Amino acid sequence: MKYFELLKLSADYLKNKNIETAQLDAEILLSFADNITREKLISLLNYDVSEKTVIFFRKLIRLRGARIPIAYIIGEKEFYSYKFFVDESCLIPRPETEQIIDLAIDNYKNKNSKLKILDLCVGSGNICLTLLLKFSNAKAVAVDISEKALLALYNNAEYHSLLNRIMIINADVLSLSFYERFKSEKFDLLVCNPPYISENEYLTLAPEVKKEPKNALTPETNDNLIFYKKIIANLEKLLNVNGSAYFEISENIFAKLQNLQTIYPNLKFLFFNGFNNKPNVLKIFFLESVC
Image 1 (cartoon, rainbow, N blue to C red):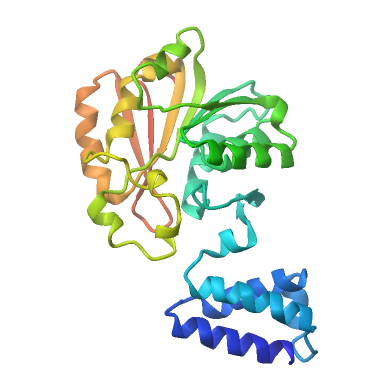
Image 2: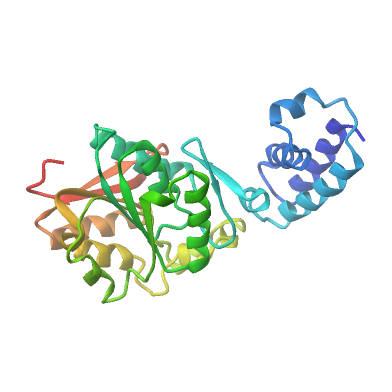
């Protein structure tokens, strides 16, 4: 069987499974199965595929037909042009999250700054590790409640040669005792992509998204702002006076977060729209700050 024939058959199969990116997914998986680039794949369309590749590729296509995300099938995802290993223990890095990196880079012009970074709900580490790659003298503390997610973070930190610049902590950021450990240590930059999807919204998510860990998508409580409330209430314990915090948000919680600002007269809330022109990032800093 030739490459173009195999691609057509697999793309048609995925279309029948209501997968909108059927052709692209087929190309990605066939490239992965044959250990070649997509550019190389295009040049081989009229050539025969090895039987070994066909067998492996068909296994991958069946997984995709079961609505397993591409990133979980191939075990990696690109974020800010860097490769990150991912599995079912952690969220898949998304392009919209890259705006946090853009805003942090814009805020801290000196790339040699010895920034102290705190990443809460760190997952695979795509945010804090990217920041460490961009700020060569920065160090980070990364926190997550999931030991399995922290293993993915460890693997990514090792891959990017950053283990000597990151401290990994397994802890619950909602616990009363968590913030006491930072009495003598404050940070310049806090980043967080917390669970914020409501239970009702979760029911409407695509099948692929529901394959991701639910506790990283939606809080185990009726209050889907619980992580924001807890972290914001403790910012004075976490941030230096000129420090800033960046949270990923969505338009569904935008109004509630605006209302939350009235509780903290000493904090400034700035909202940024993403590439879809909808609320995507919340920046918070102290009003006396120069950030």
